[in-house]
Image 1 (cartoon, rainbow, N blue to C red):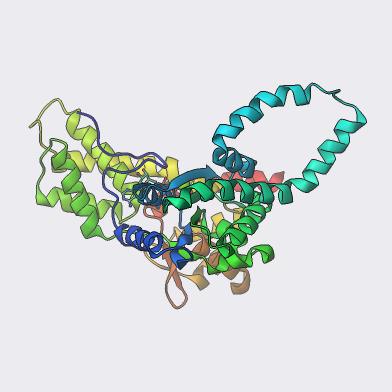
Image 2 (image 1 turned 120 degrees about the vertical axis):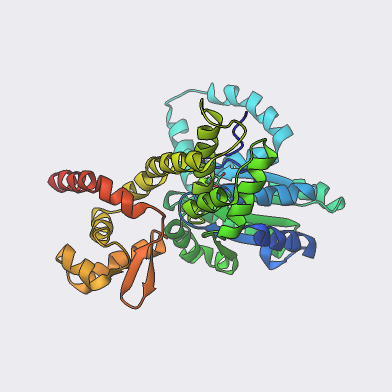
Length: 386
Ligand SMILES: Nc1ncnc2c1ncn2[C@@H]1O[C@H](COP(=O)(O)OP(=O)(O)O)[C@@H](O)[C@H]1O
Ligand SMILES: [Mg+2]
């Protein structure tokens, strides 16, 4: 039997849990007409919380309305890729012309000037070309009440220059009352850098969707629906167990589902066609291991050594940690430790449980740190020796 769960970044899950409200708001914004506030939006949240999947789902909302949807990732050169996508038929003609242009005289001073100038002009030119390309497409689409949605994923600090060009153009298009929507997504601190950029002040007016945990009740229903719709049966207690193991963290829903399904499907002994509590135990254990490789590892890698130490110091506690104890364990004063506390909260890795207390937000991170703590400590020692 095909495993219905999708524990892969960016893969649309069998049931999109807990996000109906966001989709409804976006539908409303599209139907509300030009200039509706929800048409300019940014999505943040920790790794694996479902940002990419959300962009796909919003794209589908627009496609249902027959909009043109262009999905891009904010890697180097995305402005040009957007322009190309908008000018698809023309783009083919450009591609044919390209070789003859580069057949000039390579390495001559003329080439050098062109190259230098193009670096400086690229930003403005891109903004203008993009506006032009959007305008041309919209002229035709708007006659049929259609619009254009642009989604931009993985916004990061390095894309700031191009984000500026894009945002300037989008701002103009909004002012010209064109039928557009623009949604971008990234990790909380990345997106914050972009939104706080002086040039991009208008993005502060964008609606922010900070994605977090989804309700366990909905997780449970999603398990029930997915398991039974795909040909297995299970009991209520097992469903409770599966739901609880996810902590409402979207990536974990798919991991737990996938590995439990695999345990049930691949079992040689016992009842077939039934997903048992034993399968669930098995699957949950595998899911935790995978979560470490796929989420905890990369999340820790992207942190500074002191931020990692902060987490290691927290992992010594079985529940919420006193920020004072953490500072003491780090052998630092409270002010210094607080910088890292703030940073980790912003990244959705920890949260404040009450005054002076913090706890882990990413599920099972404490266990992961306890198991891999020595390794991270060692790496830090290596880094310090560089
Ligand atoms: N609302 C949701 N319900 C169920 N599974 C989800 C949901 N959102 C995301 N997922 C699953 O979680 C995983 C991570 O989603 P993704 O969109 O790649 O996260 P992000 O872009 O925030 O890192 C994928 O396997 C996806 O299928
Ligand atoms: Mg993503």
